[in-house]
Picture 1: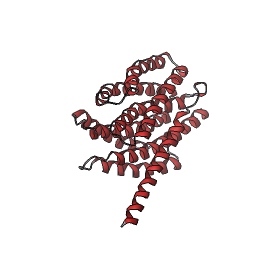
Picture 2: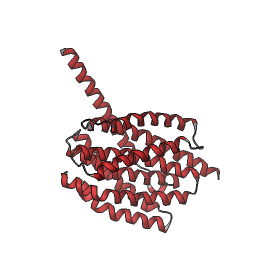
Picture 3: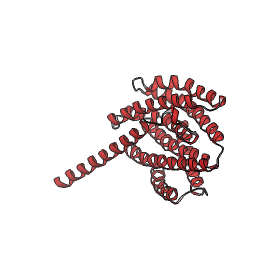
Picture 4: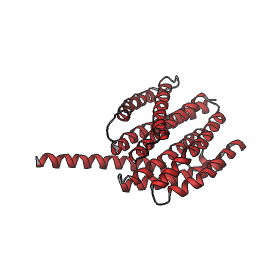
Amino acid sequence: KITTRKGTTMKKNRTRAHHLAASFVLLLLWATPAPAASLNAETAINNAGRQRMLSQRIVKAYCQVGLDLQIESSKRDLQESVTLFENQLAELKQYAPTAEIKQALERVATTWGPFKSIATAPVTRDGAKKLMGIDDELLFVSDKVVLLLQDYANAPSARLVNVSGRQRMLSQRIAKFYMLKSWGFESATVTTGLAQAKNEFHGALIELETATENTPEITQDLSMARSQWRVLEHFIDREKEPMPLFMVQTSEKVLRNADALTTKYEALLARRTAQR
């Protein structure tokens, strides 16, 4: 019995270490986005799409700190997500190819200021409530930038970069609502938001799976995405006590897969653009 308990503990520690390492690698990849001078339409769509995800990831990480959940890695996720959002915003503003896109990015900057002030202050329940009140606005204005960049690219595969990138956001939005619920925020906004985000993820996955532009490699990744989504969807539908750690681990897997898919759709768009 003692051996079994020790073995179980060691297995849990290895699982936790693996998760932390995977999250750290992901953050390292995101922490060094392309310089503004080297941005092109497809990379700009990807980076702007990542801003949508970060608007949700920041609130999710904030709640994890409030829940004392993986406190050190959660604090690191929060800090690095804030830094990445700000760096990418500066790069996108420097790249902005049209006056309309520049104006949209200014709206993002205006919304980002008060959001960042709350996210970087000491974590409190009141702070979480305030972030809930403005994170949808940050998401909305960030999404507007992606749509404008998609129109500017003027290619069918540009929408695939957008939709796949939006799956990253939805993975974090689902986890955000789950964390808020775990922290005692049982409002209709949280319940409805979680259900809507789940439905949107499912619908977008079908759209990506049926895209005629898919390569065999992308199709294989989509098959993995479908398997991961089944696990997450089943977990969300459980009517049991909250298990936030499992949600963190599962949603991170979905996020990593969606990020890899977005990068491949970005490469596909780049090839199509070069062939014109």
